Length: 327
Image (tube, rainbow, N blue to C red; front, top):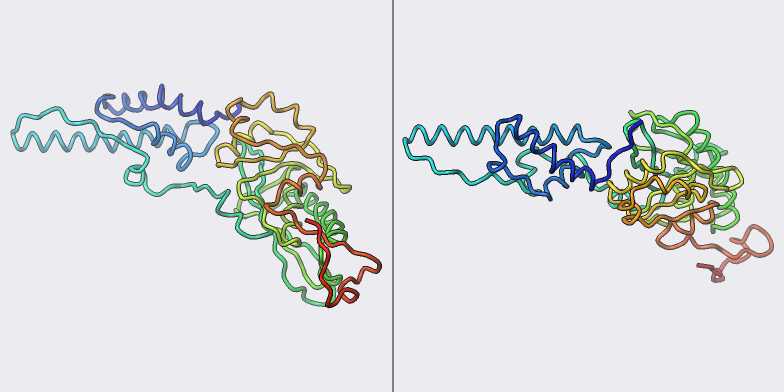
């Protein structure tokens, strides 16, 4: 298995090798076509998010072939007009010109756009093509019938991920009963839905436990997660955060996607020696041993805790009285 490149490595390889190779293959001199460094960075972020360089090479080839066509047209026009052809100015391609050369962007910085409501979190996953970010969404709907509280899963999750979701739901239900200001029959009157978008793509693996638990707790607590935060880690039934694999690939994916903070299992701290220094410096990496530590880092404002005394039915006992809150 070959690990992916960092953005800096890909940019250097593109400028030194990929672009000169594609220009030569198309019959264009380096003085005739100039692709700005900013355009190369935009190609990597907006058009070809991948651990390697194959798609980037294909995109540069498309630009080179279009440029060759323009140069030939200019030569033909000069020949028809029988004018002495002056050396043409080089064709310059900047980041803003890529829409004209390649069409609309294929990727967008979703990390900040998707985290707009409670119940949505960003996770990190390992695939055969390298690391990827994924979004986990949670929602609640009124239960049909007398008994609610069930958890529905969609997004083509595999068996391992389905078990992770069941564990996350059990842990979150216990925490919600202890800490959140929910009516006693809230869970019984609602069903809950956990979804991972891109439902046509199979997803499996033991690394989304804390992400699922955070999405569910965010929904019940009514608090939005941090917009540029991603996480990975498995969850035990007692709330412990368990180590996972593919840390280097996941952090590279977070770096490519514009994530600024990452939560990792504390036992994965030893794996950071594999991660390029430039990636580590661009991310705020936090380590957690328990779900409590994850939740303390995940929210813009921590979900409020209600101080309950005496019987569980605080709604009837404290009717008309202001609640006491802990931030």
